[in-house]
Image (cartoon, rainbow, N blue to C red; front, side, top):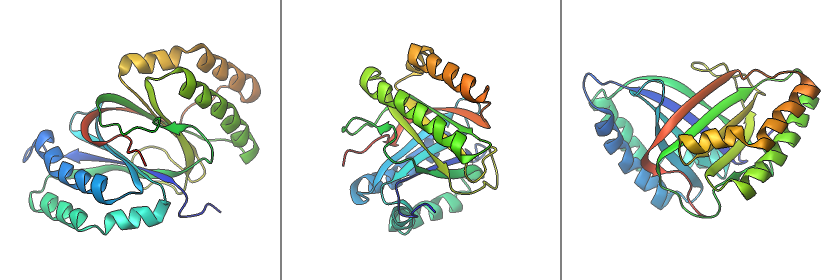
Length: 237
């Protein structure tokens, strides 16, 4: 069983009620909450806002808590969080929750920045999921993907985040995510960097090795977002 206080990533998406507010106004309110997370939550190391490439009224939030559920609980109990909920509720600013999910980080896998604080607009988040027939197959894939993540850290400075983990539960809405699925979150400086990442010879070789060993894997979901510059992509600790 995964330690509930192991490092974890939370992924949330909301649709803005654009008939009563704008995305910019929504983000201005949220930014006050993000600033408190930056200043007063040492274990919150990512709290970044991004807009969906499929729907400009939908906002995506990537959150990372170094001490897992304990960090999330501390975050939720901050006075600034209650104020955010009160302000958003009073203004009826949110239309619906599109997605709420997350994963416990794979130990010793990938990277989250390179030791510097990153607050960036225009970066592209790509998130996707994979489902395997058995844990052995999943472990083999993690090992192969981990080798490629090490390559990205060394050779792709425009790949800012390469993170992976295991979904802790089924989701009640949004993408097809089941407990035990393997999930990934990758952030690159821009769309050009995403394309370079995809075309990297080591990435293509990884796909070939996986196909040879397991057959062609089809993601259970695949979504893309562009950061707005609100919040922080990575906070150095």
